[in-house]
Amino acid sequence: MKITPTALDGVWRIEPDVFSDHRGFFMETYHRKRYQEHGIRTVFVQDNLSRSTRGTLRGLHYQIQNPQAKLVQVISGEIFDVAVDIRPESPTFGKWIGVHLSGTNKTQLFIPEGFAHGFCVLSETAFFSYKCSDFYAPGDEGGLLWSDPDLKIDWPITQPVISEKDSRFPCLKEIPRDRLPLGGNTP
Image (cartoon, rainbow, N blue to C red):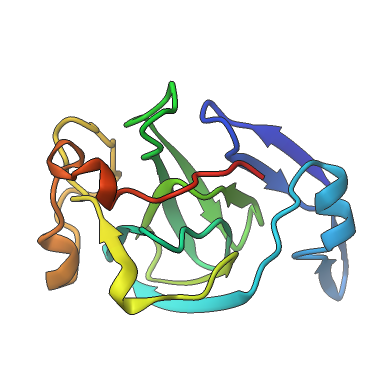
């Protein structure tokens, strides 16, 4: 397993070991002890799976009182995955990174608490799997507008298919500090 830091503190790009032969492949998608040895000590409590079609953009989501760290990967298809640092005291507050994740490259991204997260689908369909460090809490949701002009996220699509809820999120500068995630711990 190869774990590489990104430009945002606490966000890690993970390339699991993949064992391939004429039958297909095998890989561990998560092994707590191995991830802990690399500094990712987060305990995950919920796994999610979504299926989306080409052009779908989901995000940018976070939880306020119950922030979630996430370990994300694509099972099938391809996405452009984005994490935005929304930790008010962070030197990279308001900065983002984007990573292409696919069923082919099998790359994962670890995103700690204190980040907004979203992705857009580049293939016909994509199956997206992610582990969360806290349970989904519907009344605790927060979000950033995907097209926030101050963030300048370089999305690889221009006309996304987006939910009504996601289209109404505010820009980061419009969000009061008490509506940003508490804690923002790194792994």
